[in-house]
Length: 417
Ligand code: TMP
Image 1 (cartoon, helix red, strand yellow):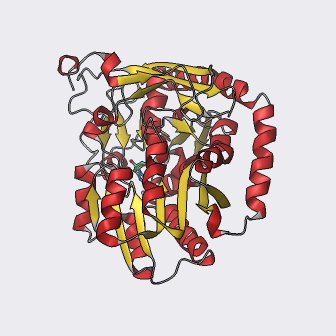
Image 2 (cartoon, rainbow, N blue to C red):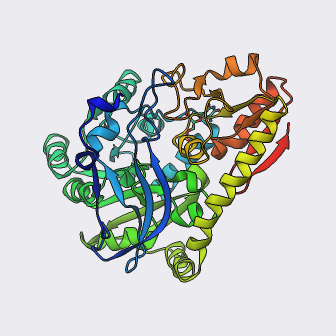
């Protein structure tokens, strides 16, 4: 996207000097500088991409972690390319979510709605187990893929008015799942407004997000990008739910996206039994927010940058080639924060067909298929999709390639296959 086609930055971003959850004062945590939205892949490496401030801040009252500048959703998703990958780890996770829903009473007759359903992989898995599944996703190109797979999917942003329409057409939902999408809206209450309108009296809401404590304690500063406007903890989600007379009754931690939390919530009147996991999680969050973990997290971002740029420049100087592996949004933040470009990282292997042939924004690194990367192997892969590291390393090994792997997170580590 050329700079000239966009209006002024102030129209496209909404800076706010207050907490978007409780309206209290905020303080700066980490300024990553100006960057293009991480998923704005370009068709040409020299495409000038619009950049927006990328700054993490924290509420001094409710401890919410949020971006100071939120890019307008219409602009952010104008060129959305994220398609959930086929992954063994994700399939196991879907199974665990299903088991938890079953345990909490969701049955064969349930109507399940997924908000931000992407290419429909979760609903495809759920479909044989429930009466009806329905997806809703604002990215038309992505929703179309789900429809082609036979998953009933509506193209729209989920909010109270869309929810009311869905309820009128199909009745209340017994289960609403919102995986990794509540942080994608400058006003996360709009999703809960919709839930409040659509969820049945005893219905279950599952909100899954990257877990703030994992992000911080694991030095995952690359989880910070414009789509991730919030870094949720259970205490902040519970605080939001209170507005709707809802609360969390169970949580499930997983390895997904570097450490995620799935919060199971319901209306208070439905009287679900609160699990010990909820009590323990809230207690550990109290300890965490009382420590200096967030200050150390900010410092570690700069240490990782120094260390990674040193490793890459030493390798390039000695004639070695490095490819990234996984054209993730995390990868965009990592490359751009570290100032790494196609000069040192010319290619990025990725299994997603719609990403291949495109270029990572600003760094200009070209996305190629895994097959091409394996036929033209580098001396080292920088694991920009480090959250799938076992699967990626296994694929490289199976291709008979001997090379180094550079793990950027939680600290820069070079290993050999
Ligand atoms: P994510 O961490 O945001 O889910 O993105 C993972 C990226 O990694 C996605 O673009 C697909 C890519 N990927 C591969 O290229 N090969 C794989 O085996 C897996 C699991 C993911």
